[in-house]
Amino acid sequence: MKEPDTTEQVRLGRRIRSHRLRAKLTQRKLAEALGVSYQMVQKLENGTARITVQRLNDLARIFKISAAELMGDFANLLAGELAGPPPTGYDLTTEERRLIAAYNRIQDKSLRRNLLELAERMTM
Image 1 (tube, helix red, strand yellow):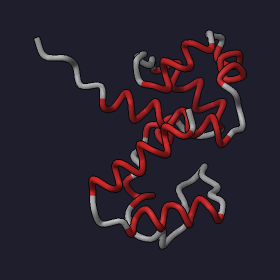
Image 2: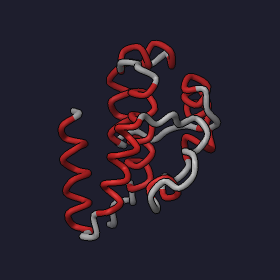
Image 3: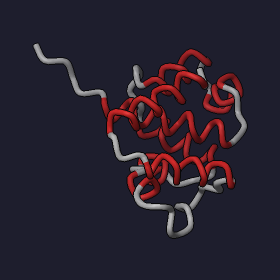
Image 4: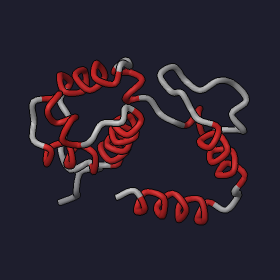
């Protein structure tokens, strides 16, 4: 039997983690705000727990963004050299803009993937 595709769950989990860090919330603080355990927040962030519409809306409210923004794809943000302003709800620092611009200049897809995985491991 084929395993279900969890790619979107994992991508959403990464976005949740990113927003939590931007909001300067620990997993425990976010868990308290959601009324769940910090282990549930961990599962949401690593994509092993499915997220309900209600929980998605609660997260968006906590992060002060729309649910659509929380679910949205970062493709527009990562495309090009950040010619325009970041999407609503994203206040990128100069360092974040430099990092994204440098990442976008890497042509080798394998190297880009490896760099992203390294950065994610460094933050665990």
